[in-house]
Length: 378
Image (cartoon, rainbow, N blue to C red; front, side, top):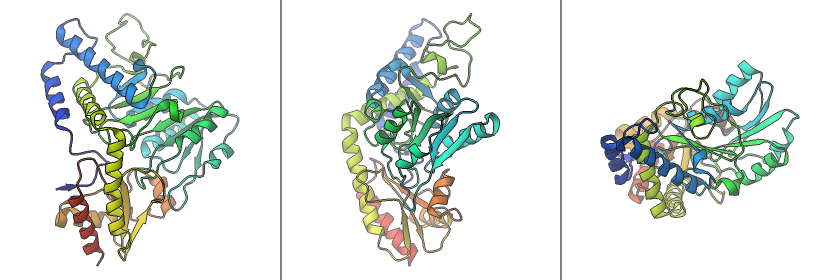
């Protein structure tokens, strides 16, 4: 199989990730739930992973790295833990339903006001629009770092400067960029960075988290067992325990820790360069094929390795099915959980076929995918 659905999840994982998960399943107890050697080993594994993630994302405190099962949970924690009744939030057309649905629910249930920065026909945002939408009750700006549909990257530093100027919380969804391009909280000015472990970070599914700037107060989404302060009727207030009720996925986090070691050993810049070259090779191969329409802005200096397209008047699901059944190429059709982005691009009715590339793809994969698109377009 030629796997080109890496924006959904990376199928091919580094061997050391698999080894780390297997070892963890055989050796780890429950972190903070005992003083036996297996429990202590689990605690050390989690701490080491926090430290690696803090270093990767420029989070100044390892105890402000919070583990979740994915970026959806991380975003729910960030959004529900900071936005109060009557607040106003600014977000964008680029957002995934992991941002949109929590916001829509707050709009319905807690009278939260929402404004969205519109995307143009290439999927880009007007950065000036953010400041124009700010009101007296604006609490936060929530923004995707890169669209999971077009691959366009947003200039977070400029948005963060707007947030700082007005005293707003800046929440970033880094689902598509974590592990793919350099991302430093201090440099971009992010208050909360939400990430998932199973995409660009090449870790196991069921892993993800938040990196939180010191001084940001987040109300727990869930409360319960923590292994510490068990006689207190309230959830402990110190990070990370404050936001980590229940047993963590130590086995998956051990794999994520190994994945970060793999990424650091190669270098994110080198990974980004290779994935970009694969993407550009595919883009150059299909952009002039009659009947192929490509979405997104390929003039940008930096983007993630995604090419979304449609062929003739075919439904995207039909094209993706042909790619799978006839050519053994895996892609992602449909709406990609990004309804506002599809509306902006005019692809609501049939969606789009997304090709997304990773470190483990080859130029032979690209050539075969280009040839498949060419044959389907005939």
